Length: 118
Image (cartoon, rainbow, N blue to C red):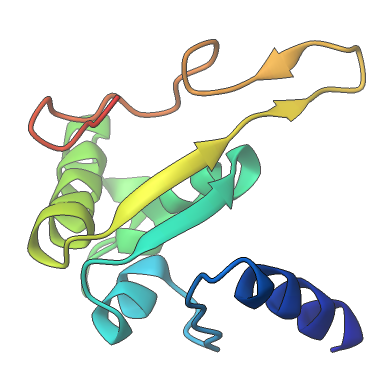
């Protein structure tokens, strides 16, 4: 809790607004704060574009094709980025071997052009 407080104060000191939420999914966070920017790390973005978080009721990952999973993900990302107006600013990270991972070097999911803002 103290670490969260320290980080929040740092953001507020720079004049930025900050929303702290217990909403587990970014689509839920974006519903609370439409047209917001979310600064996330590469690993968090990896989870955001993981289809397992978007499985419709009555479906399973094991019984569906990659095409269906990509459709679920694209639908969720369209809701997040277009309908709710969220923007994801993704920071890269340094691997233990010294290499740098970011969306240019190691893209995780190809966004349709109307959703990608590079």
